[in-house]
Structure formats: structure tokens, C-alpha cells
Image (cartoon, rainbow, N blue to C red; front, side, top):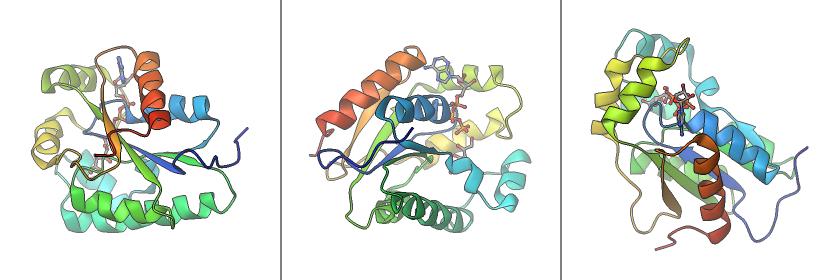
Amino acid sequence: MTQAASPDLPRVVVVMGVSSTGKTKVGTRLARQLGWRFVEGDELHPPANIEKMSAGTPLTDEDRWPWLDAIVEHVRAVLEEDTSVVVTCSALRRSYRDVLRGADPDGSVFFVHLHGTFTLLAERMDQREGHFMPAALLQSQFETLEPLEPDEVGALVDVTPPVHVVSAEAEREVRRGGQQA
Ligand SMILES: Nc1ncnc2c1ncn2[C@@H]1O[C@H](COP(=O)(O)OP(=O)(O)OP(=O)(O)O)[C@@H](O)[C@H]1O
Ligand SMILES: O=C(O)[C@H](O)[C@@H](O)[C@H](O)[C@H](O)CO
């Protein structure tokens, strides 16, 4: 059951971070906690992007623009149903987040940046089964990552603890309004 948008909260939360930080796990849980709709950003990749990543080649900006546009379009359609949205997207660069901020016409987009060490995430990637993303791409994900800048509304959340602790922390940050620096 999804709830109507609340005037005190953002309408869109983007759960971002490099591969294997738990965007899907934490995002689904966070959406449930808030009673919002969940959108899996990976499902909106053009098939060519999935093929490329599966073959071990990092995506380029040109690969990512149509994907980001598809996410924006999808989220906007969901918002029209008068519900708020938690969406997953690596959102590695500032310029990608500038596109994603367009998902809410009122500009109310909050970023939860999940972060963990390379060693921890490589271990989680190795243990994960049935996912298209090879562990070899983790290095390029870290190289591409541009953390949230002070003027971006959002919060950094450590993914070392168990998922339920991470999602509780994410919810606290969303309700608190994040850094809003
Ligand atoms: N806080 C956590 N503690 C322990 N394991 C976790 C945690 N978060 C995620 N995992 C595990 O790490 C793996 C990656 O999680 P998940 O698929 O949610 O990440 P993701 O960021 O969505 O990945 P990708 O971007 O590659 O799709 C999964 O096997 C998941 O069970
Ligand atoms: O921006 C990117 O390089 C990619 O989109 C990846 O981050 C994947 O979407 C995802 O995280 C798969 O594991």
C-alpha cells in the first residue's frame, strides 16, 4: 500500500552508490518503511547497456544519458499517481544527478549515498549470485564516483552494518532533511 505524498518530505529519494552497495536491498526496504513506491533503476537500462556491463565493459556517459532519461520519465509517471518514490540509480556523477533532479517537477529529490570500502564491496560482489555486474567493474565505478557536493540535498550512509540498520539510518536522514548544506 503506498501513501499519498507528504508535504514535509521529499517526493523522490534516489538511493545511489557504486555497484553492490545495497541500493536494491536498502531501497526496497526504505520504500516499505516509508510506504512509498519502489522503482528499480537497473530495470530501465537499454538492453545494450546490460550486455556491455555483463561483458565487463564500463558504461560511458553516452551509454548512461538515455538510461537516466528513462528513469526520469518513469519516476515522473509514478509521481502523477500522487505517491512518492524510492528509486535506485548509481548516479555516480554530479551531472547525472543534475538530470535526476528533474524527476520531480518541484525539484524535491533527495539522494541517499550508500558507501562502503572497496574491500567490503568486492567481497559482497563475489558472494552475490545471478547478477549481470562482474566484480571487475567495481574499480571503474569508484573511479567514476563523484560524491555529493555541499549544495546537493542528500546524505551519506555507511553500508557496513546489516541492511535493516542501513535502511533505518537512511529513513532517519530522509526525515531529517539530510545535510542541506
Ligand atoms: N548492509 C549489508 N550487509 C550485508 N550484505 C549486504 C548489505 N547490503 C547489501 N548486501 C548484499 O550485497 C549484495 C549487493 O546488494 P544489492 O544487490 O542490493 O546492491 P546494489 O547496489 O543494488 O548492486 P548493483 O548496483 O550492482 O545492482 C547482495 O548480495 C546483498 O545481499
Ligand atoms: O552507472 C553504471 O555504471 C551502471 O549503471 C551500474 O552502476 C549499474 O546500473 C548497476 O549498479 C549494476 O550493478
